[in-house]
Image (cartoon, rainbow, N blue to C red; front, side, top):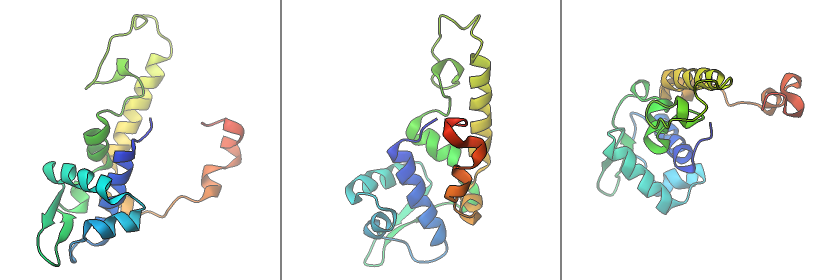
Length: 154
């Protein structure tokens, strides 16, 4: 699974809004600067998030964007599905964009990819913005541990 730029940028902006939750709304310019996202592109993403009911916009001189729901009510799964449409690694194990494959009856690795889909969906659907925000950032030592070195894990 690979996140699209839209999902990535949406999650960045949402986590910044978690940080500001209960305070003043944040203008799109500040959200863009703090997250290294092109402002015009982020405006479209924020409008999508607003239409989905995840954020709200407040007009005026001190207006901007804020979460429309508690950070505990929004999951990464919701956001990624909204922008990317699916969490499945291949179409023949997707519930929303299923496409039949001519090898389904005897494909040996399809079951593994179904398990991947189920595990990714479970993790993403349990990852609320509140939980994600509370976690520590990943260190490079965790990414490049000896067990996963030389491409063994990726």
